[in-house]
Length: 129
Image 1 (spheres, helix red, strand yellow):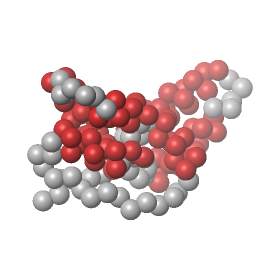
Image 2 (cartoon, one colour; image 1 turned 60 degrees about the vertical axis):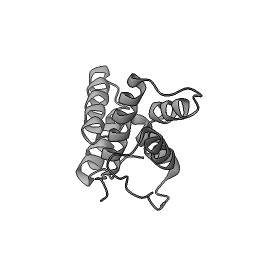
Image 3 (cartoon, one colour; image 1 turned 90 degrees about the vertical axis):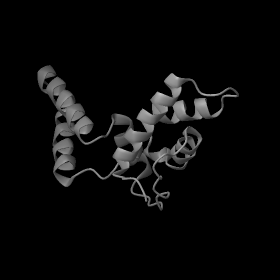
Image 4 (cartoon, one colour; image 1 turned 180 degrees about the horizontal axis):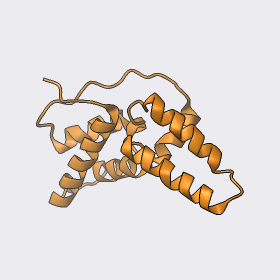
């Protein structure tokens, strides 16, 4: 699950979602496009929004903040502990590379660092220590 959505963005999304039932094709298309841009600007995806709606506001203590220089294995453990903040693709990527029997490739390590950074940002985290 991403970080908190600002109240003004949530209000805007609620209004835009109301327009998705419009009888006018152009109005529906514009509302969907604007809602997607609003979500992206806030660091959310549609998966995140629907997941939040399904789970509700259940509270869970956040895992500890990561430390600088965290190894790829440490990043994978942190992502697993924060899986509710990951998109479906991010969670599957982390699961698939964590389950490999051979060392990660340079491309996988780079993509892992990118995913790790996105999830940290979505949570609104900074580095510990």
